Length: 423
Image (cartoon, rainbow, N blue to C red):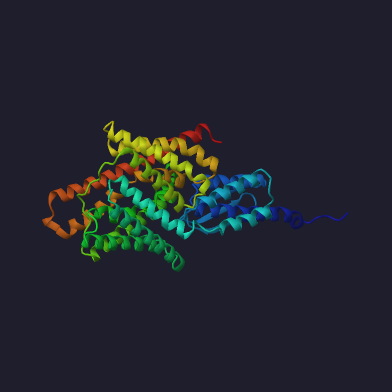
């Protein structure tokens, strides 16, 4: 009788491990690079491994994914940067994971489908530009701007910035060129508008187009990683988001300086009627859903949740006399309770879905006013008035408190719900 050598006997096992490794590599790279939470990305890899009867372990880091098939000696290092957000790709990939785990599709067909998903284009340029313009104008309404000329200037500036970003994306893969140049354009347009006295709300004409650039999903994903003990990855996400915010501030202030203007740190928001506030919040949510390539059929869900959250915040501030940070916490707590199960049901990334729903609560105005105040403070030196420093501290403290309130409001219900309802 002819025996089978050890190498021949091991060959089928090696081939199966290689197939599993290649499939897992495609899935986790696609999810990691398009905004899925780290926990769901790792869980997807483990589900695929279980379906293929392989023990899969994934160690994500900024810029790299380490994938190991335990017991096979297979370790794969794949370059991957979690710098993008595409909800449609994530939803389709998670649906593919369900099919693989349920045995409804084989490895070859799954890999072919994943290649098609990875090459699916984001939201079209016209949709991107139009929704950016509408979202920035809606944020201006929330902050009290009602003049049609000012809203038109904000929409024009933001739409031009969106087109500029798409053009730069084709020419450069640098992560910071797009927000820097878009903010620079917003600052120049705002300075020209002030010089020509086209608007009395310079701070909104310049700030609202920049608020569209704030990397909220990366901040939220970073907070989730820190809360789960993934310290290096969480800090890396925060660093990336912080650098983008720094580029936005630098571009905005440089654009204003080119036009001989500065950002007024004393400007304050004006209360708007409840119905206008509610409609504007819904438009802002739809805009950010479009930025993140959310499918049209699912877009009404975050719009309704965002409008409900903003109504809650408006009532707490206007009727109950609550501060902006406590009101943001309660609104985000409501969003976290609603979004956690819905995001899993729709297979979309929690951070992008949750941020789109609460984008109107972001303290972008406070952050940019603080940056403008710091520049003025440095320029004036010892001649700076005491109220300028007080304004800088107040804006910075308010922005920090709102960000913390939003992060805790979104994360706490997510952790609790996943604890008692892991499915």
